[in-house]
Length: 423
Image (cartoon, rainbow, N blue to C red; front, side, top):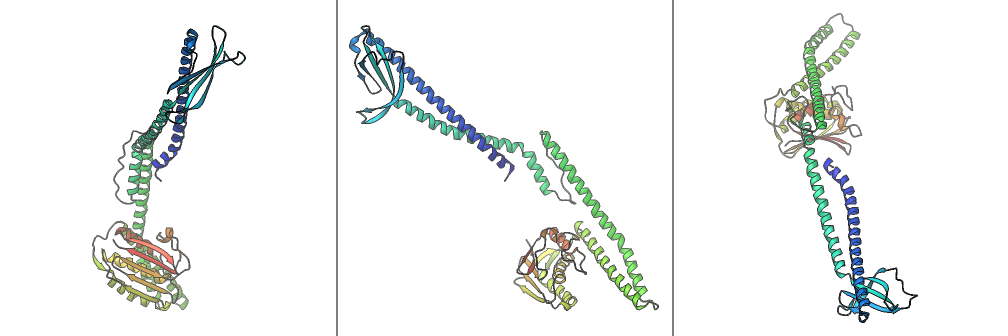
């Protein structure tokens, strides 16, 4: 969920509650005001009727029309409550409409000059008030929805505009690649916090880039410098092994040193290759048919690992042609196939499937899924073998990244499967 949507979700509920409470209070105030106005109308009407009745006794009779009506009846003094008016709601039957309609009523008492007591009941139809209240409620509901929508829209636009520097920073970070040229961060903002964030992030990524370049140059230089001493050591060991005075035990020790030195030389070559790949020192490319390349590599590897008696199956559905450096293509396929041989057990299975845009290499091996986070990391072999430098899959990852080839790994049915997708 995006930050802006998460914030709007958190704001929506409080805004909804606040406006709902405000709407209820406003409606109650309107209803109370309407009721007060109706009561005032009844009181004014009462004063007019009583004054008229006191002035002319012939008016002491009932009056009925559609909207207003009043009833006057004589009552004993004990029943008369001269100091109290009673307001209440009621319904009356309207013959013209043939239905009951709501009214607001006032019951009061008054005394004439001849000390006779009368009860006056006034009724005022509230049909118009109810229609008005209903209209107000519906209008408020529409206004309520429109107001909330406008507020959320304005908040969304304002929040998005305020967060524009953050999105620009995230976009720049997403495109940033350590060890490669990256355009400088151009993210002007008047917001102090974003200025600090820009400076902090830029300092951090620049420091990471510097450390990466220092490490890369160190590995590259160290590998170059080691080439000559390693070659000298290898030559001296070969000369020493040919010396006529060497005993059998000494020859065994020399053979062990020779094997260890070979491992160091392979490691040094792998480091040099990684450095050259990272520096993009393989500009020459051409169309390469991986079908022919795979068969050529298998001819050499099968002889080396013949003792394992592995069952090899190659399925060619279509020709797979890609454009890349021939040397790197050979290294890529060799490392993947060699990985399937080295990390397999005796009489295990290897399956290679070739289609127009996909190459799959599967092999039996340890009975568990390998950690994908460590699988292509340098010197992070999860099934260490004597002939492995721990850089084979790291070199594979560098090559596929260089040519935008997708590589996937999965473990299913006892088979470790590497899949290359060529776009």
